[in-house]
Image (tube, rainbow, N blue to C red; front, side, top):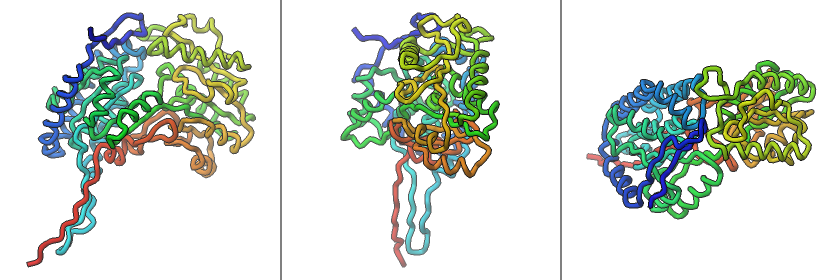
Length: 462
C-alpha cells in the first residue's frame, strides 16, 4: 500500500492534508508531458509569457484570505501578518520587469561579414523542490523567471506545505499557463531522487537542509544536471560601538524571531561591541518580552508554533546543551505560558555563549539567539567567519568605509549594513560554503534558468 505524504498541522497536531505520491511511471509521464509542451511555450512571444505569469501572481493575490488561513494551519504563521504577498509581489514584478533586458541577446558583431552573438536558451524542464518556511516566495523565486524564460516547470513542494503547490498551479492555469507547462506533483524522497538520476531535468533548484542538498547532488551525480542549492545559514549580526542601538535591536531581534525564527536568512547569532553589550542585551530582552506566543488565528499572536514539533525539539536541545555548558537564558518561562513542549516554543535569548556550543555554530532555525561581546572588528570578523555556512551577514555602523572593509572579508553571499533578513530582487541571492551554490533573483537569476548558446555566422559575400 502506498504511504501517504502528510501535512501534520502544528496548530493542533491533526492531519491537515495528505496526498499519495506519484508512482515512478506516473512521475515519468509528467516529465514527458512537460518536455513535449515546452517547445510551444518557448515559441510564444516573451510578452505573452510575462503577462500570463503576472496574471498568475494576481490570481494568488485574489485568493489571499484562503491562502493566509491555510498557511497558518500548515506551518503556523500568524494570520495577522497576511501571508507573503509583499515579498512575492515585489520579487515577481521585478523579475517580470527586467525579463526583456536580462534575456536579450549579447550581440558581439553584426557587420557585413559576421553575425556573432550569445543567446539565452531555456533549459527545457526546470524542477523546483520548494521549502515550507516561505512556501510561496521561495517557490516563485524560481518559477517566475523559469516560466518567463520559456521553460516548463515541475514543482514538488514540501510535505509541510502540501496545499501550496495546489494553489500555485490553480493560479497559473487560470491565467492561461498550459497545464503541462506548469505541473505540481507529489513525490517521496526516492521518487524525487529517481527523476533527477534519470536526467529528467535541465535545471534543479532545491531549497532546504544540507542533508537534502547532499541527496540532490548524489542523485544528480554523472548526469551533469545544473543545480541551484540553498541549504541554510547561521547568519550573524555585528553591532559596532557607533551603531544606532535602538534601530539595531529592533531589526536584529525581528530578524531572529519573525516566523518563529524559521528564516533562511534569519539572524541566529549576534556579536556586540563590549561598550554597547549590556545596553543591547537589556533592550533585546525587553523587545522579545513584547512577543505573544499563541494560536496563529488569534489577532494578538505575534509568534506562532514552529512548523513541526521535531523542529522545536532541535532548538530545545541546542538551548539545553548550551545552558549545561554555561550559557545563561534571559527570557523567563512564565512570560510565555503557551509553550507546550511541542510545536509551541517560547523565544529565548542566550548570553555567556561561545563557539563550543551548537547553538552558536549549527543552524537552529527557531526563535533562539545567542549574543556575545567583542572588543574589535578583527575578533568579530573571525567569529562571523567561524561557520560552515555563508548566506548573509548584517553590519551595524554609521561608518560606511569601515563596513566596506569588513564586508569584503566575510565569507558569505550577501552583506547588509544597517538592515537584515531581506531579499532585494535587484541583487542576486546566493551563498557559499555549506549554504550551497547557485544564483536567484536579479538579472543573474535568469542565467540560472537558461543556458548560453553562441552563434558565429559568416555571411556569404555576393
